[in-house]
Image 1 (cartoon, rainbow, N blue to C red):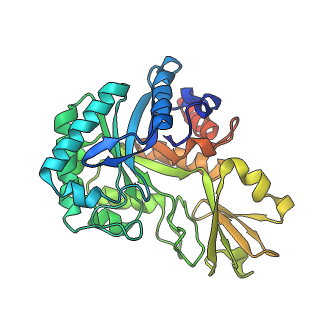
Image 2: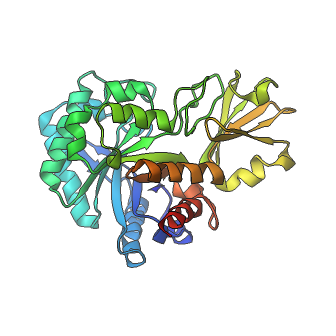
Length: 336
């Protein structure tokens, strides 16, 4: 689970069902990894304390996130800066007693957040950064990174053959595959590709497999939120139609905002294994994961021998019988 909530909120969730919690996010302050404020410090301490409830739980600090890694390219181009950064990661891990680092640089070598600098050399610099982190952290700390779920990232951002032997896992962001900058609707977190949409979790897994990335180091991604579009024509239930991105809705708010009582009709793309809803009178379209698609993704991860399933993010879930519950139930059923 990625987690950007506060220290108190975490008590409402069943952390016993998690293997990892990734605190989101720390940022660069100069060349060093920095915790932004006292609130975040308290949250990290709280997350680590959860090991009393779940002794096998790992807690990682995460760098960056969407919009949170603007200085990454100009800083990590410098060898001495990478060394200082790696040392600061070890200092923070030792201080908080956390278990490692997750790199959420979106994205090395290719355009990410609008206006953020990027260099072609970022690809090599990311490799050098991971090598330095492994050298400083040793084998006892975990290193992972978040990967965009699309071909441009696969080809332009990471030297997979060099990086994967050094990391514990890659967290494949197989969501936001249709994002806020798209003027056409689609499935933002599809499990499989279809005739109109190549981007999907399965497409990403197959592509990484073709590059020699070990399947047992890949974590599939799920979305605990919907993306909605407005001004979507009433044709084909709004799917693959022009529209304007409207909003992000947490899974725990679906009953309020995306229900049949609000005028939405539920549909399922059986090829993509992707649910969606459309409101014809208001011309609103929404794409998301739900309990059924989460079950299918979890089963897919088990069938493929992947490293696991992760999601953005825990505070968006329902407190009881939510999507984390569905993940855990699917895993438990397989173990019987």
